[in-house]
Image 1 (cartoon, rainbow, N blue to C red):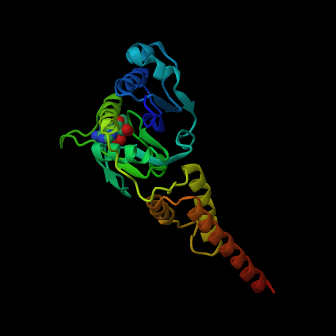
Image 2 (image 1 turned 60 degrees about the vertical axis):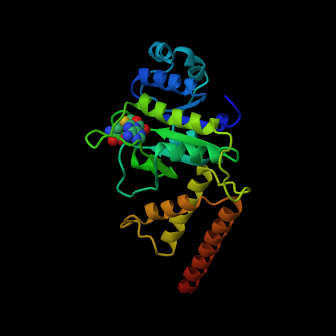
Length: 251
Ligand code: SAH
């Protein structure tokens, strides 16, 4: 692994077949990637089947990090790319594998990047998809869109390898921009929902898609620490203004 590839995590969510975990490790190893995260694997892990299929990628398996939730796996990441065989009802910005790899490698000098893969049967659920900044779709035939999980990892790992080998990874502007990681954004989203309820803008009985749309807006902007502090400050001021109004009404 070179320095930049260490910034790139491959995250497998809820994998059912141990063979797919092993084959994904092999796919990573041949392309010079080493950081594998397993979110609540359904497959027994470690397993002899995974080890057999990993072949020389066995060290990738040994160093794999097993966590309970996707949020744990993407902790600290400034860019989260979710792969999907299909577009979602509330579409996210979509990249093809080449564009996704170029973006990942361009951003890796400044922050960790995660590429997230879903379950064999059902892919990523809505809650997981909502944590992603972009969706990545591997173009396929019109008739059948769904690759085997480890093969999908291979396609993306190959594109990352090509992008890592290119001697001039693209610059990302502005250079001092460090997007806040998902765990900090999640705290903000909870405060935002509570504040919007407190001022009567969000009706908890009829939330429609307001929070989903707002999440998408903020994930598109990817605020940095200063910007998120300002947004949190606005929520604090809104809450105290709303409290003042309630108190005055109560007089
Ligand atoms: N029926 C599931 C398919 C899951 S395939 C669905 O509709 O989502 C298992 C995983 O492999 C997917 O979650 C995704 O991570 C990856 N994958 C399979 N085909 C893909 C494609 N065409 N583009 C991007 N990722 C794909």
